[in-house]
Structures are given as C-alpha cells and as structure tokens.
Image 1 (tube, rainbow, N blue to C red):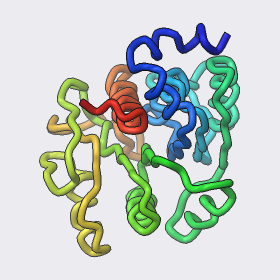
Image 2 (cartoon, helix red, strand yellow):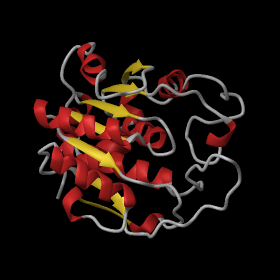
Image 3 (cartoon, rainbow, N blue to C red):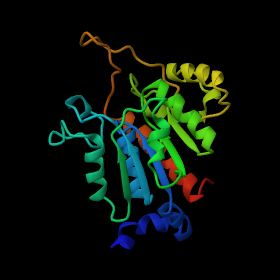
Length: 237
C-alpha cells in the first residue's frame, strides 16, 4: 500500500531521492494557516518523521485558512488534530508533538526531548522572540532552517519569494528580524516573504489582529514544504 501511496512522487523524483525523504526528520514550529498546510504537504510528500510544536487550540477564526480547522475540531489541540490527520494521510510518517508556547528560555528543553537532531527546521510561528530564538538555535547546532515571514494583511500569494533575510524588502516583519538578527550575530537566514505592501485591516474589535484570507497562508505553507522537500531529497535543480 505504501508503494501505491507514493508511486507518483517516486515517479517524479526517483527512488533514491524519495528514500532520502523517507529517512528525513523535520521539525515544524507553528500549525496555523502556514504551518498546518506545510506539515500536510511534507507528510504527503513522504517525509518520514515530523516533530510538530504548537500550544494553541483550534478556534472558529481559524476556519478561513487552516488545514486542521473544521467545525468538528474547534476547541481541540492543534497538535492532536494534526497528528490524527497525518495518521489518515500516510502509513509511514512518524509524528512527535509538543504542546508548548515557544520562548527563548524553553527552546533548548523543547529540542532536548528528541531522539536526535532534526535534519531541517521550518519556522511558521508568529512571535518574533521565538523566531529569533529558533534562528539562533539552528545556527548554533548547524541545522538548516527556513523561516516564514508575514502572511497576514495580504491578498496576493503570487508575490511570495525566497531570499536571505538581508536581501528582503517591504515586509515589516523582515525589517524587525533583520535588525534583531544583526544584534545576535546571525549573518544569514533563508526566508519566505512577500513583496506585497500589507493592507490596513478594517477595525472589527478592540484588539487589532492581522487579517487573513483562505488562499494566502496556505500557499506560503506549500512553498515552504516544497523548498524543504527539494532540499532534503537533493532535487534542487
């Protein structure tokens, strides 16, 4: 059955590349609109082991963009729902989860429980302090990392592109990350960002939150997964 599930993937990238994917271990931080779609694509592509980190539960406001957000999953832990979905997608993907809100001070503990160092880290979280901590941890431990920049307040997924953080423009999150990474002596970080000027959200309540739409964060998630898969499989031509 496994052979049939991944037959079209193998046909595209070859047995050797697929074997590299099947033996890969990827850590994904954040299971929101970006991360949930990224994780699903990684599993459907044949990545063998995933470590998923998110402290949130599914809410009604997640329904417009998140892979795991359904009326039937509202109120449940995102890691739990994602794990169940992946078990229904792939017979050979080992999934480990951590229901922790990532902070600079607890990040070493988050990684300490793993059986081995991940081959790749994908950062799909929103908190700047956690994104910076992940970038520093990846540099210190020599783990390839790919970080998603801002996807909120945008309508044009076709404007996403990959770049080093120091070659980015327009994105407000990139600006903050560049400044803070310099302070931490992180001289390079591979990111996915958008050249689209963010829209100003219509005020809908007391607390301002980023606006979003169904077709932008998921595209970012798929792009992140594609970059990771090509790199891990060794098919970056």
